[in-house]
Amino acid sequence: MKQLSNLFDMKLNNEKISMVTAYDYPSAKQVEAAGIDTILVGDSLGMTVLGYESTVQVTLDDMIHHGKAVRRGAPNTFVVVDLPIGTVGVSDERDLEHALRLYQETGANAVKAEGAHLISFITKAAAMGIPVVSHLGLTPQSVGIMGYKMQGATKAAAEQLIADAEAVQEAGAVMLVLEAVPSDLAALISKRLAIPVIGIGAGKDTDGQVLVYHDMLNYGQEHRAKFVKQYGDFSTGVEALHQYHEEVRGGSFPSEAYTYKKQVLEALD
Ligand code: KIV
Image (cartoon, rainbow, N blue to C red; front, side, top):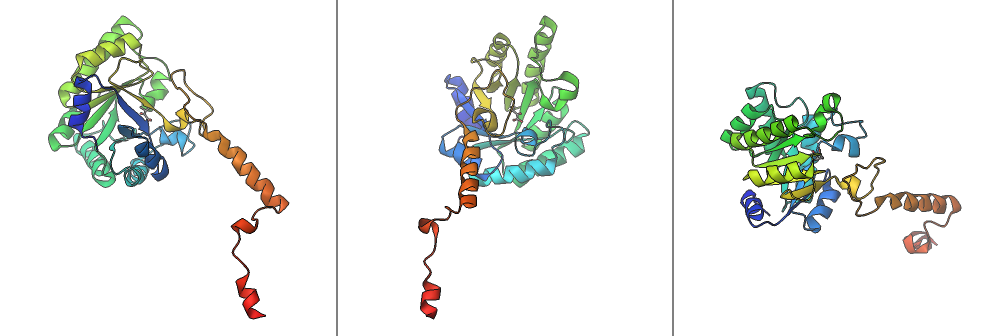
């Protein structure tokens, strides 16, 4: 398994880090078998596997449930699990309890927390020994306020994002996920920070890339953002299911090949 130190070495050696989301045992097994460097159990599971409109409905128990399954499917991959909305940023005591539960119960290598307002949480979690990945730029938990749009687009916003990125690193964040920001800004932040910066919709000059499993494999997702490249097509599952339906209705499934022999009745004769 890659350790945090390996991911830092990759940054130093200009080796790109791959990250993909996974939410359950089989997807985690696939991601590990593909040799991907890191897995994110993102709260995007609210949309991809639970059918919600956004990540806002996702709970800590949801993340623990899915995080455990991913760890079972990918025992040898560096796994990061999301802290969902409202679980941190309330009070130090409560924040740390939630982070500790998520970290301990899932067996993840790090937890991820969205937003620049979590400096106190990141500092205290780091002191306690919990590795925290920060997430800045477009933070989907704040969709009700910022919407799904590119961040850091003005000079003031870009300067703020640079300051926020430096502040989370200073507080003790071990990695940064940077979402939907102009590529030149993402390149500058990646260069300035010592911690690995993983981009999504942030151009090619970050230290690594993350994509959502269901988006890149066309699995049950209708909308695909501009920055998502489709690498596979799991929508063909519908054709397979339809064929099964037709064969059951037409009586051609199960054929002899899928049937136990009728030895019991023959023995009764
Ligand atoms: O929840 C998630 O999948 C994420 C990625 C979009 C980075 O946070």
